Length: 251
Image 1: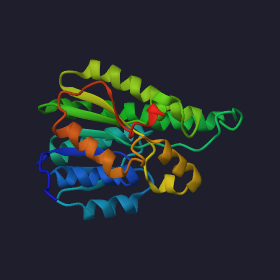
Image 2: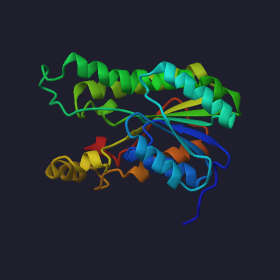
Image 3: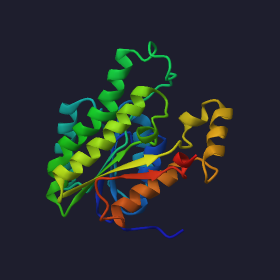
Image 4: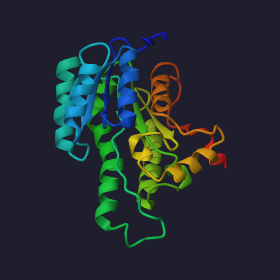
């Protein structure tokens, strides 16, 4: 396989970088020549192991709890001091829990607040913290990892769907507010073959595969390839939702 070096010397911060999607994103970016800052909240060992295993050099793992705005500001200062630049921020950190949509009582206030604090406010806080670095170079890029649930309103719970819809709206607002120095794009995967999904009822995700016109679920590599394309070739794409869902909304 030809190694894409389209990001030689670039610096990327990936929140939730040690998860299923995050790991694939980090690997693709590193193979393209980027230096990675792998953000984690609870997966410290996995994040440091990934940093050591990635191709290339000068990768680091750092605590990046996206609900901690003060901590993000400290991390932004460290990135500035270590690298002197930031080319790409991937807001990949997110949480959810399965709650049937009809069960309004089970979707308690604490869970709603936690989902929005991480999935929406956390992504916004990262952009706010890293904006000066993203603006300082030739032009930065923010990729918000959204979900098909933000458009279809079908997902793990109502609050999760709403948080991803809010992320998509935020993407459009920020793309307008931060242009021309910073592009902002939502990347919207369908159901992806992560360990989380594979741990669910097999009959359910087999059914989701059958309902997808391309007859398979997204893989983490599908999502990572789209991230790399947005960073290297789709450079006139801004303020929109880019689907990676195999055509699932068509059925």
